[in-house]
Figure 1 (cartoon, rainbow, N blue to C red):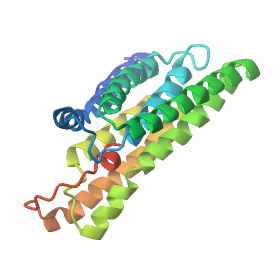
Figure 2 (tube, rainbow, N blue to C red):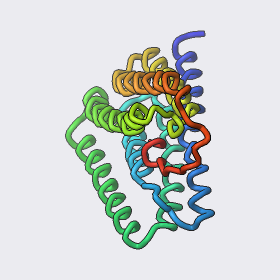
Figure 3 (cartoon, helix red, strand yellow):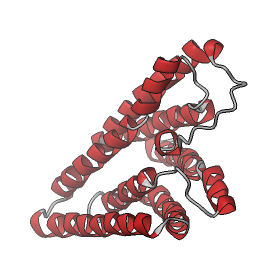
Figure 4 (cartoon, rainbow, N blue to C red):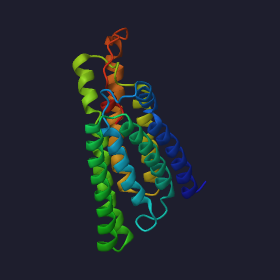
Length: 232
């Protein structure tokens, strides 16, 4: 099997794992629909992911970074999934919550439009366009991978991993490793760097899980709404 075919196979696997991660908040939204209220949940992870997917879709276009179809497919799917989640969140939010959400979404539209216009008007080679958009993607991914720090801090403080889901941490690790492999097969630093950092973040979460699993009180029925932290 040549490198191109292997890269395609790894990319398809990455699409599958990433798709599972995108769908992981479904239980949260089923609770929102059942309660007809967003309760204490925050929209931050979903609007952040929507913006992230938007920029990555632009990065994968042939006019920016050729031969990146699998980047477009998974981020296109992620964009649609996050748009559905945000629609549900908007539907069951208070009027004040809807206003804030609309303001953030308007900002995101303006920001992405600005990135597209500046990139296409000011940069005229694949290398320069890939660099500009790729660096923006790296920044967004680093911010997203840093978001679980709140949960990790709570785990260390409480010596409990009850609110740090093991399957999510494991799937995030697998996802980062697969995309690192994809980036290495046809070297792409803009995909490699954020996913390498994501691998490190996931490893830390798995180590914390192994360390504090035995001290976790699984019978504690106090429900803490952690979706804003654990789903990012």
